Image (tube, rainbow, N blue to C red; front, side, top):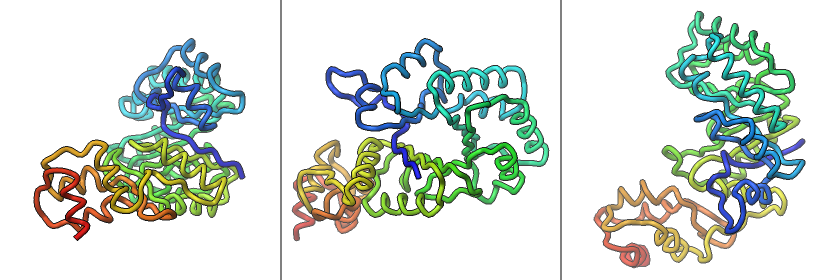
Length: 304
């Protein structure tokens, strides 16, 4: 079983004096190229990405949104041309996986299923495995969608912290956002353990985990450390309430209500003890309902 752990992009992975991708590739051996969803890059730029990373480094590529959100996987000339460019990007990066995201508003009617099947039957993807993430409620992903995945050997992509793939595959591909709102989330130790356990129970030949969100680099690194050492690293320098104080000092704006504190700070992870990390909401839930003027006031209230 091969496990690759990375994140959705490298742009925010900064090390002074180093190119972001080069620096990223020293910490991780896999990245999902997120930018290709928004803009199709030139071949020259893509080639430069490949040159900046070690030989064994692995890319996966996100399919451009025009194909899925504008043309809705219809086999029209514009969509076919763009899709072929995405396959070429995969080949330049030596990427074996092209991730396709379809929007929640895409209804899988009988006619739509027929169109999507025509689309996949039209494409030459030799050497590139398709990974499909239908952004619909699980109940709306009917048997015919899964049948398309089976017929074209497409991997069903889900957020493993929320769902389980609807079909078995030799490859498990998960984009991990967690249980928060938008990108505001950080995984606790227990949640990372659950992702690891769930991934291994599915017994895929290859597991690819791409973390997303505001703390994605830390979450991915923590899971890598756990898999190697059996324990998780600390996320702050302090423990308990001092750890909470440390994360609140990062960007909390005052005055602030308890409700706003929970929304804007509760998703962060703190060190409750040397071997236990929890969300900041563990403490913030204990606060009385009122407005707070500064961090010290919050900590004093929790010390009572």
